[in-house]
Image (cartoon, rainbow, N blue to C red):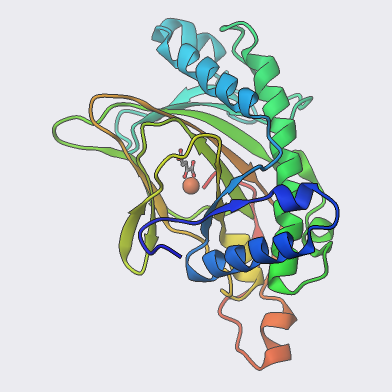
Length: 289
Ligand SMILES: O=C(O)CCC(=O)C(=O)O
Ligand SMILES: [Fe+2]
């Protein structure tokens, strides 16, 4: 594996019958990436490529509207969840704005009506990302040596997932923070991005740029998988550095755990192999990291 970039894995063997060798090789690379730092990219992932293009084009159009237009789809102050358009407060070190969406059909959703077709594309891509989530979940089970349905049974309720269409403002002379370094608190996150670049993952103390490759999706293993596996798989530390002279557009899809779920290292990674748990159990809360 090239030390200065993150691996890209072709998932096509999982979409055809009988390519056991292809699946095995893909899973070996995924296992290595998750053991080392919890980040990899996927291609032939099942999400239609023209839909990814459309989603990025429409979010760019939306974010280019004047504030007044964007704020028409801001959540009301009494809204139970901040669906719709929001912008990080001026005092935040994170300089981005975003549209937050919950699963299609959720009564919490509050979609922009402009540009035309944005809502349809957001709903469609959300559904595809859930399907790719099922696939990644089943692959992670096998990579961890768990039963193929383990994560699905552990976490069967998909109504807690959400997705953000994001726009990062261009860096200024003095600062370039887009999202401060963090780990995601969910199971795993998918990111796809335009060509601007700026996402970085920390590996052995060094920041590695996740160079955009058109039509790939970044998979970011998060805290729940790290805790269940007693840190066999790492929750990746990542950040976004804003490029100069241009905005950056991305989508982040959070494959979450449903509310108030007890999470602790599994016996398979602790007492069954004589290792002490590295974490105490906790109730997960499904919140944006
Ligand atoms: O926009 C990105 O590339 C990453 C977003 C992210 O890390 C997050 O929202 O947690
Ligand atoms: Fe993140």
